[in-house]
Image (cartoon, rainbow, N blue to C red; front, side, top):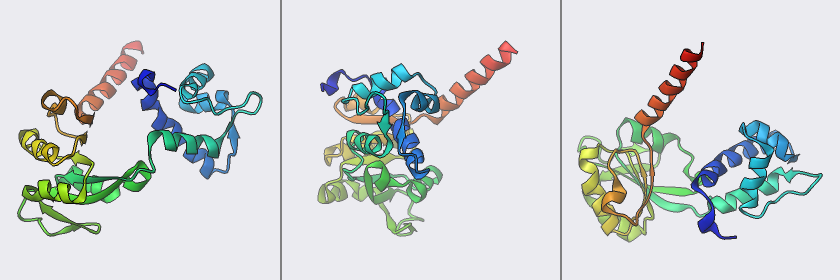
Length: 213
């Protein structure tokens, strides 16, 4: 299996497979056909087979897929058992919601630090984690061997924070800012979250439907 040839579109579908398989397992469904899985995924059986064949297939003709086994295989492919150590920068509304409600360990990460520059909230806690001064984030990341950072800060302050993190060995980012990290740090691994873009895409889809009525 040559992972370099696997398209981003296939990789981005894997979490959806994992999520739906988790729901099936919770509902005590032990096996599923490619056709039924395609129906749940809103795609085709051919697409499901093509996607999974990129990683070895996992199915048996006439039997379909074992739900627990396929879920476990996708979990391994995604690396969800790695528990990469991460910090969250920005304890505002979005950062606080993420820190308080995301199930990090089930998603492959272990959140070990939260940082902000607001003196009024330093020392207070989100869950069991105290909010630390962002000025100390470099030393913290070096001492704790942090591997990823979740950025929930304004774009204006993002570049300076990313530079500190990068120099401390952190090169993977979940980025809620509009700062183009890879423009300055091309070897960084970045997942950008642009909420405005997503809302405009929703608006487009609604507009298209209205025009067809």
